[in-house]
Image (cartoon, rainbow, N blue to C red; front, side):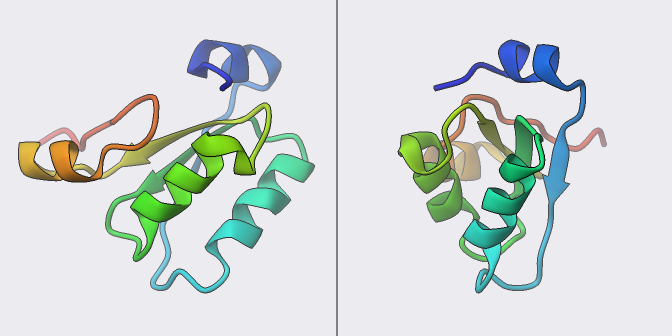
Length: 91
């Protein structure tokens, strides 16, 4: 698994993916990886986010660091955490 530091050293960009549905989620991640994006955050408000993060982190995407975003509470963090980092909105 690629660390966030390694990913940002390659390209200092984090793509934030927020979608209304999950139908094309893995294809979007693959496309971003193909054009060189090495750090991605999938917001937990996106349907299927936890599954997509597990897929990516489990080998679906090589050389990419993927984390969960828009994690609003501790319960969501414990039940859905799948990526190497978990950013939360500043409130």
